Image 1 (tube, one colour):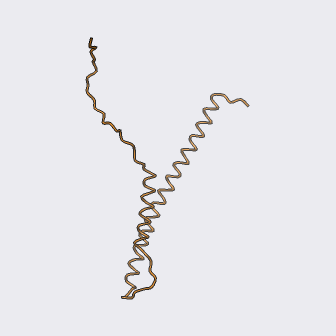
Image 2 (cartoon, rainbow, N blue to C red; image 1 turned 45 degrees about the horizontal axis):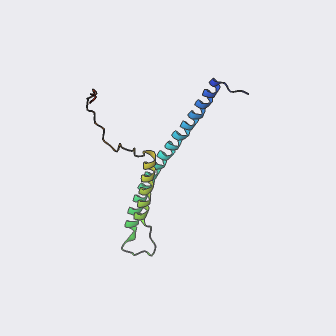
Length: 107
C-alpha cells in the first residue's frame, strides 16, 4: 500500500494528537498526586496532634517521626512542581533596542 501525502499528514496529526493527550494525562495525574500529598500532610498533622494529646508525659520507646515524614512529602511535592513547571533559560546577554538602523560606510 502506498501512502499518499494526505494520508501521511493525517497519520502524523493523529500520532501527534495522541502524544499530546498522553502528556496532558500525565500532567493531570501528577496534579492529582500533588493534591493527594496535601491530604496526606493534613492527615499527618492531625495524627501528630492526637499523638501529642495521648502521650500524657510518657516517653514511648517507639514513635512516628512526623518531622521526617513532612520533609519527605515536601521533597516529593517540590520535585513534581519542578517537573510540571520547568524553569526557562534566560538570555545570557541582555538585548537592547537602539533604534539606529542607518549605517554609514567609512572610506
